[in-house]
Image 1 (cartoon, rainbow over the protein chains, first blue to last red):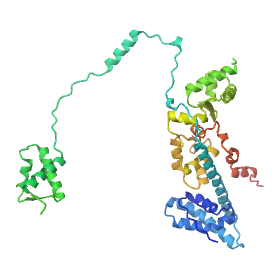
Image 2 (image 1 turned 30 degrees about the horizontal axis):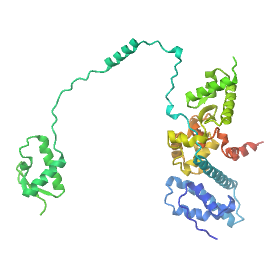
Image 3 (image 1 turned 180 degrees about the vertical axis):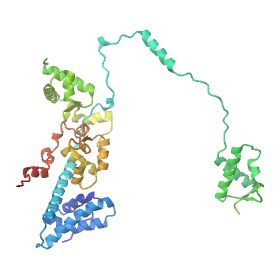
Image 4 (image 1 turned 90 degrees about the horizontal axis):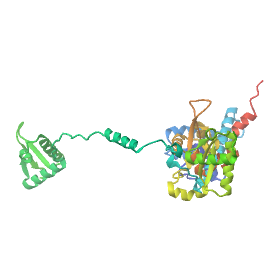
Length: 238
Length: 188
């Protein structure tokens, strides 16, 4: 009889193999291994999650399963010593993995029982200072005053920084908005209208970038008849 | 100079409390000025005392290091006062690695991977960062790292020693190694 079992997520060849065997409630024996050989192959064929580096591991196990299945079908087939060793190795590893898979569940329930023990972790790296009364260092009020004066001295004088006037620079967004307002009012203007009386280079550059941006967005069209002549700015909506 | 065990016990307790982290028995003996055996005796006394008076303290022990910790029964209250629990988001894969390290440690990464059949470096690094496993250099080959359980792992399990794990003796044994030593190659 053929079972078709869908396993959503398996981790590695041993996990897959163990789950196939356990789904059918079989023990780890050569017979059970040879029985799940086909399903194992189907799974590695259909599973797209198996990465290339994992694939070799899956294939190593696959070859051993195929060998076992052949042996089950052809009783006359004798395994070589090396093959025998490989099969034993697979059985052993599977049994070993099963042990720890089960113990992992036990550990999980131990952890979930919530009987954790705590330590004074917040104090780690901070050594407690224990003063013995009779060994207290001899410190006078004057000492503390002097120490504080030294601290004050070590603080640098806040020097006055040179003042500089910082002008607000028009942002590109603002300029784009301004130009859109101008164009919506007049449908057409020249570049010098946009920069108006502004002589500042930065402002002109920002205005130019804003025009370029609006051209890119197909909101404006620009025309320039000759080099250095006035740039005509026209609404892009026709 | 010999000291009453009652005194040794008292001094140990105070040092353990102030020190906080795991402290080696050797260092503790040095600090208090008694033999390591007396310290070991002190541990037994303290444990007995904690048990008798249902104390909120417990002592965990790992590789000749001991640490004063809170009793597992108090976990719920202590957790409320200090921080969230360590068990958060331990995947089943991480638990598998953790169980191999706990039972078989010190164990090489290759051995863990041989048992699980998949690469475990990412999970191991994660467990290292969380302090649940420790990494030591192999004494045989300094290029090789071995992984073993940490004091934090013992505390997470609420166990005084790693030997308290269920079926410890059974799972600790690597049957293959045992068979190999039982039947050494006899040539000639």
